[in-house]
Amino acid sequence: MNNIMFRTLLRWAEGIIHLVVPLTAVVVSIYPDVLGVEDNSHILLRLILGLLAGIAVADMLARYITLKDIEDQTKKLSDLSNVSLLKSARDSGVVDLFSRANAERLNSIIDAINNTTGTIALCGVALPSMVEHEGLKNAIVDVSKKHDVKVMLLKPHSFEASRREQIEFPLGTKTTSDIIGTESWIREQMINNRRFRLHLYETPPMLSLIITDQFVFVEPYHFGRPDGVEGCIGGKVPMLKIRNQPEMGKDNTYSFFKEHFEYLWNYTRGSRVNLPIDLVESMSSSFVILKNSSEFDIRTSGWELSGQDSQSPFQFEAGFTWNKGGTIAIAQREKVAPKADRVFHTQRNFMGGNTILRLTNDSGTLLNEWSIIHAEV
Image 1 (spheres, rainbow, N blue to C red):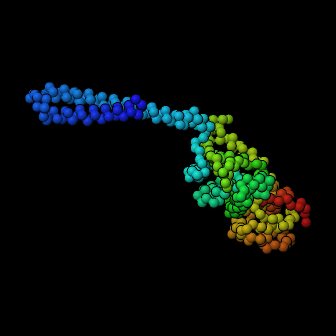
Image 2: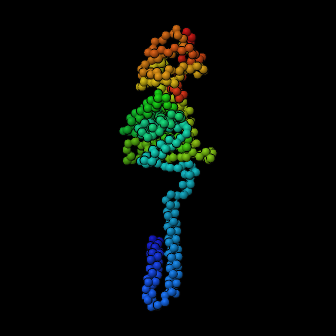
Image 3: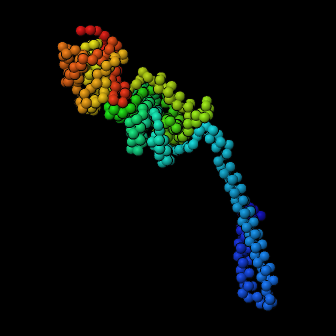
């Protein structure tokens, strides 16, 4: 007799006991002559005791069946999920796994970003979802009002970008256009006085990373295209959500991915993306002329221009709008009158004695820096 049939018989027995014993007691109490006696007091007593015994037996059967069900389900769960695998995932900080088709993937990322209390870091080839998905975009912009947003993208037109285009064929050209689109959007955020910082890398892309103070979302990059797979190969492998576990010390998986990002961030420091503002002409301790080569008019309230050792940075006047394509000049001496669309005179030695000139927005984000001619006039 198999397990299912045995359990079915037990359930029938349980049901019969629950139904027949109480029904018999009721019938005998109403019609004592059914048993051929007039004095039914001792019979009722026996029936009551029998009823209690029947209920006890039925309860025992129900408990036995329930325990068997739990045992069977536990065995199935153990067979299907592999408890040791779950333990390894827990120890490694893995709290979830998402396919690209899983709608909860982006919701989980957005929730982690909304609840962060510090810098967020993103690394990918192009990260188009950061620009195209409204919920994710808005969450990142909100964070940038208080915390730095550090982004790394694959450098467009590099060897690795060309390789990626070949792998993604016939969608390859979209890879480069997506990178350029994301880069342009980040520059726009920098103009809007948000705390975005962008580096470009040229190494083979290894990981897609989204890092908050509590979680890292990691998806491996690969070059594989199995037979029958068409279009973009990104998102074809699962994305892991890993919890930060400081109590794990050197075994905190989260910290390895965070340090991977920091290493690559420092390695690409020379490929920092600045705001497209050109230094047209300069003379140390005298004047500089800058041109807005971006695609946008810029409101420069709170922006500062200074040399590295200057204690008196030049601050743009509130409400000034620097038109795209327009030039401005900042002169430290009134007798110097460089030609520009707008000239600012200042008595401050905002350049100091250094030949490196830096432009920052009101959140302190470096927008651009230049080497200037170290000479006096």
